[in-house]
Image (cartoon, rainbow, N blue to C red):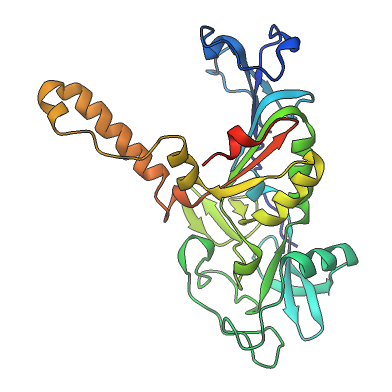
Length: 314
């Protein structure tokens, strides 16, 4: 089984304790600066940074009773999960030597994981996506294709098979996070995929020093896998009892007014410094909305106890 290291839990933003509870449901006064109306709480499994401003709380667990915004940025993809391989006898757990990365087949998946796979990660049709037409699930090894897959030439020979990453632990983690919100919005931002487009090879990979490396769980690297975002969304909605909204970061930021457009050239003549600042801001937005990069993040918005309209508006 794979174990993932160095999880990065979410951060929460809540109204200050001095906020009038009787004003729930009404818009805060525009005359009160935002900084005076919120309290920021970072949640992280690490020591508090020495240079963090005193006004920001630092916890190692999500606090209860959140009113406001809970943001989980690239947190779910670090929640540990099991990897499975499809064989002629069905799904079996994938085992790995934590020192070398050598892979072997383990026991058949348990009933709870089998149920999750049946609902959220269906077996590809025989003969599709390079699978063996006999239905055994085994296939020829493929080269890396984009951010989801990694080249495996520098690690022990892998089991070349249809794989799945059981997202049940991510579902449970997100449902628990949403349960800490009394009123407001829970937002998860992560790379992921949907049921009809699950990657046949899975997405498990490693990162070390900012570079992609084989996902050997030896403690020397971050081991991560993309998120089955529709499964996670369904789990959160059951807790919140409110519909969720799922879309790309590109769509979300553009809906918020960040279009990445270049400033007018006339500004360069009238205000050169202002033009440079505006150009830098536009470049940053373009990077955040690039569909082949950060713009490909999924944004899962889960309202809790509030009208979803303001959060779901496009």
